[in-house]
Image (cartoon, rainbow, N blue to C red; front, top):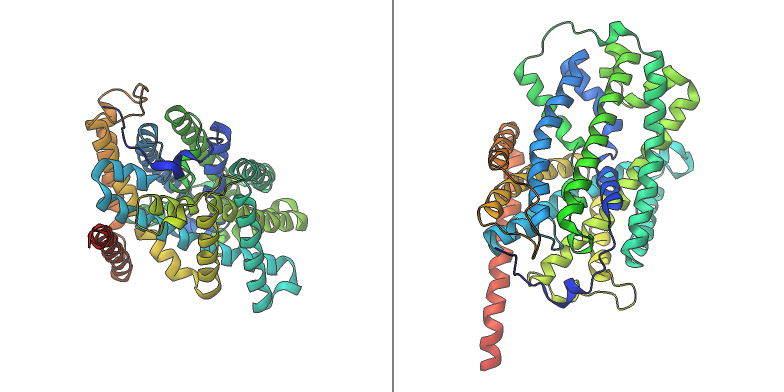
Length: 445
C-alpha cells in the first residue's frame, strides 16, 4: 500500500535539500555532544577496565533501535521524524503523545547542554564566569543559531557539517596521543562485571547515543528519503561507535583507575598524554562539541512544532513558512525562546531525568511503528521496500526487550515526570479535537 497521506501546503513549501552526507553529519553532530567528554569516568566507576563492554552492549542494542528508525524513515518522509512515523502507523492520538514526549525530551536535553555550554565557555574565558554573563552567552547563541536556521536549511545543514568535522579533531587527537601513551596494565580486567553493573552502565551510556531521533525530524527536507535516511543512519552509527570505543580505551589506558574520579576525564587524559596544550584542546573541543549539538538541535527540533501546527495541534501560524527563505521561521523562533528560557531557569538533573524516560518511550513507539508500517506495507509512492526478509520482523521485538530492560532502571520520580508529560499531551489532544469540532458548529450557527 502506498502512503497516500498529504500534508498540505506548508509541507510542500519546504525545500528537499539535505542529502546523505548532510543527514549523516547531522546525526553525528547531535549524537556526539557534550556527553562523551564526561561519560567515560562514570562508566569506569561502574565497570573499571571492563568499561568498553558497556559500549559494545549499548551499541548492539542501539543498532536494533536504529534498524527500526531506518525502516520507518524509509517508509514515511514527512517532517516530524518519529512523531510522523507513529502517527502514520497508529493514528493522530498515539502519534501526538509520542511527538510531545519526543519534543519534551529533546528540548530538555537541548536546554541542559546549552547550560553546560555556558559553563564551559566560562571556564575558558574567566571574564564570562558571572551569572549574568552566562545568561548573555545562552541568549546570544540561541539568537545567532535561530537566525542562521531561518535563513535556510541548506546553509544550516552545511554549517552543521563543518561543525561536525571541526569538533571531531580534538577527539581524534586524544585517540592518537592516548594510544601512544596508554599502558596495557590499565586495560587489564581484574574481574568480570555483574549483569546489574553492565545494565547500569548501559543506561548511563544510552544518552551518548541519543540524537538520531532529532536529526530525522526534518524528513520533509531530505532528498530521496527512502534511500538517504537508512544510508545516513548506518554511516553515522559506524563512525559514532568507533569513536566512542577508541575514546574510552585511550582514556582508560592513560589514566587507569584514576579515570573514575575525574570530573573532566578526557581533558585529564589529554593532559597526561600530550601535555597542557592537549588539556586546553579538549576543553575547547568540548565547548565546540556542545555548540555543534545546540546548532544541530536548533535545526531539527523546531520542525516538531511545525509538524504539530501542520496537523492542527498548535495554531496554524506556527506552521508558517518564510516567503523568501522557505523555512518554518515561526517554529524556529518559538523553539529557541523556549529552550533558552529552560536553560536560563532550569538545572541539568531534572531536565536530564525528563529526557531520559521520554526518549526511551519514544524509542519503543518507533519500534512498534516499524512493525505496523511493515505489516501494512506502507511505503513512499512508487518506491520498493528498502528492507526485505523476515529478520526485520524480529528486530523491533528485540529492541523493545532492550528498552524494557532500561526502563526498569528508572526511579519513581522519573516515572511520575514522564507520565505527567503524557497526561498533558492527552489533554492537549482532546482540547485540539474539541476546538476542531466546535469551530464548524459555530460557523453553522
